[in-house]
Length: 82
Image (cartoon, rainbow, N blue to C red):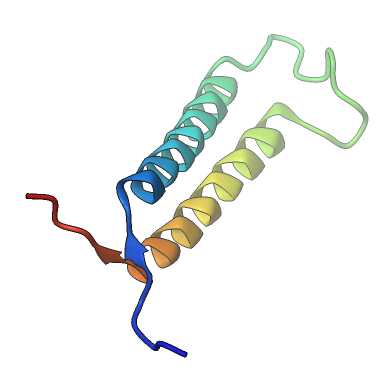
């Protein structure tokens, strides 16, 4: 069994980029939600939830996903295309 790290192919880098883009989008949406809180924060929410709690949870989830993605990227060796 080889102990060399896996090679980061262009296909894998593309996948990582798309995952990172999705995380960035989620984080941006969370910021927009937090900034555009409705006049009545409880208007469309279930009891016990608030716009602020939801946006903070979305930010935390996005940041955790970004850390995991960074760890995964570090396990791969970049391929240099000539």
